[in-house]
View (spheres, rainbow, N blue to C red):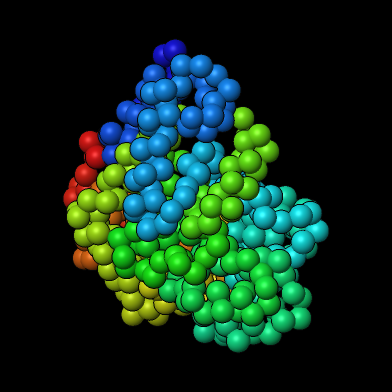
Length: 402
């Protein structure tokens, strides 16, 4: 249909003619895109390799087994389920595999860096499970001692780590000690930092975690989808059953092929160089904001938080809309102790996984901070800011050629 082709071209132009700073987005390789749009989408394959409910799955089995082999090699674990359609699906499946309705999950709240599926009142997670939250110190780091005290009191069945907007390194070993002490399972949602873990620039959740979930986009730079990993044969059996027939039907084998390709790419030496550049670019931008006088979090990862209310007297949602005028895309984000509603927020989240894929350097990352600071503080007018964005865009790779 001509209309949809025109809209796809319009979206390609938007992606090329903009600075993508949403921390949960990235640009896939051409190989990943081709596999996701391949004839593999034609095949129904309910079940798992060797145990399908449809005939003609022998090739599909090889593809899914290859994806499992690659992802377990990438993260140094024994078992994997590569079928979840998303990170939220992966979390739902993982919870269902090892918990009963009404069991207690100890997690970090949304406004302190957690995800919707970690117990937000609007998520399934808070409807099916009892949610208790641990907290951050005033400096924005996890209060591990407080976590241990809360765990002793609430006796959770599962303790959850891995977050949506937490910019610091996580001490998985320390949380595992707490979980062991109170008889809880330890689960890590590494959706945001999976690429950093794969590249060895963030500690691995293994061997500490009982279950690890992730998306395959974000820093892993693959197609949109989820995975569940474990070292336990008993746990993987429960996960597989909770996945199918529990929560999903036929897996998206074209997407699983795309996942396999992204796992293969993440195993290559150049991927580690890429992730190292992501971390350097993120820190360069955050440090430049701080030098300019803005209120920002620190960062050890691919993202950081900018307090727009304290820095520019503007809410997160208004800042998000404002920078769209100069072709910069980022997202409003709750901050610790945020007094604004989730739809408004006091700040924004910025990440450099996507721009680094397009060739962004530390020099460019600093310029991004200067442009945003200049525009939100009204030191730059719209035309001046757009000209500087155009200059940066001229140094970046075309999205369709990646």
